[in-house]
Image 1 (tube, rainbow, N blue to C red):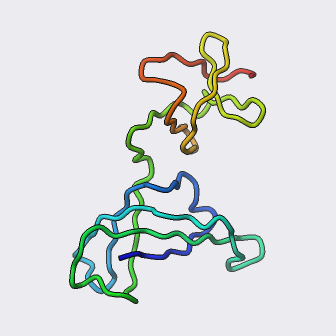
Image 2 (cartoon, helix red, strand yellow):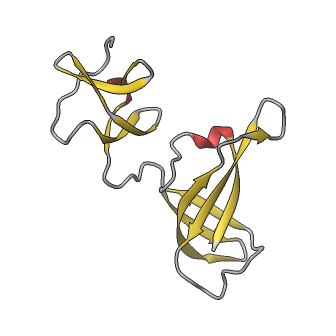
Image 3 (tube, rainbow, N blue to C red):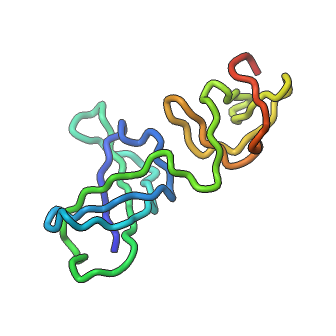
Length: 140
């Protein structure tokens, strides 16, 4: 089963494919299902005004249940900040060089694989390891 959601552009901060979610059917509010963000549309469309855009998202629902039928309305709660196999750094530690994200270690810039940025943190899947000391702030 899949759930399609129309998201306001302001709701996109921190969203990335693969994040876990909880799905609740409006018709059966006491039942919760585990889900996963499968797809975000690459194109935004006009929303309620010309200044606000919307993006379509698709969530998968785990398991099977007789109550999961097409055309039911649902609520989706995404677990922002739940990135398995990823590290978080202070957002100020990310230094952009030539359009690529990186960090400075002892004054030397090195590229990183950035998964997502939140207002306070950078989620990293590679280029830095647990225990590495990185500089916070400064120029590239």
